[in-house]
Image 1 (cartoon, rainbow, N blue to C red):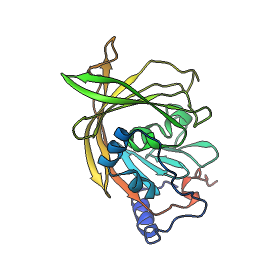
Image 2 (cartoon, rainbow, N blue to C red):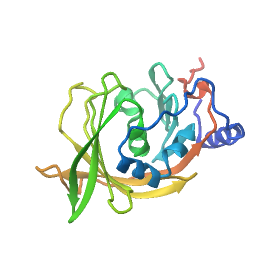
Image 3 (cartoon, rainbow, N blue to C red):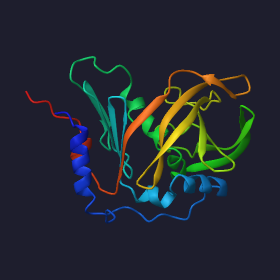
Length: 252
């Protein structure tokens, strides 16, 4: 029943033999993001490299997250449960009842967004706005606020701010709001420090991130908890079958 990482590696390796574009995928249109963000994307491997990829996978502890980058179909596999999005609905499968504590609809793509930074900030339907610099330990980090046009995604009222190193154009911080339950835009930003990165298949992907407490001015002060580590990155032009993202069938 469980889809293990070894199987995923084998499937992707086989799929990589066919690197042709899939039917129905439209050509990339002229970009409309700010020049500075374009340099951030370039530093992390480039938009073209990102959009040429089909499948992304990474581990967070015992969780194996796998995403189809075109359809955004997703599976999160663990030893005790799996959940995902099959293109139509979010599903949950538990080895034992009560194994998963949380909301699958909120969680299934949560860490994908954190892991796929900064590239998910080049999705369609995005509005960019220059904001004041973030200041941490005397260093200024320029930033851009990202908001969404109406009816884009499950939480179009979410806002993000990406802050980058003004010399290297590497992403350093992410501020974000959460509107999943309230469905109302707010200014209650959470802050993540992108501590370290690693290069895989010409893309620079997060290796470790840390949530930070913030002061009354919205500036980060100190870590709010232990770092979150990502391991075993996989980026492929190969496409996984639709069945991979479907809810497992329980045999009677």
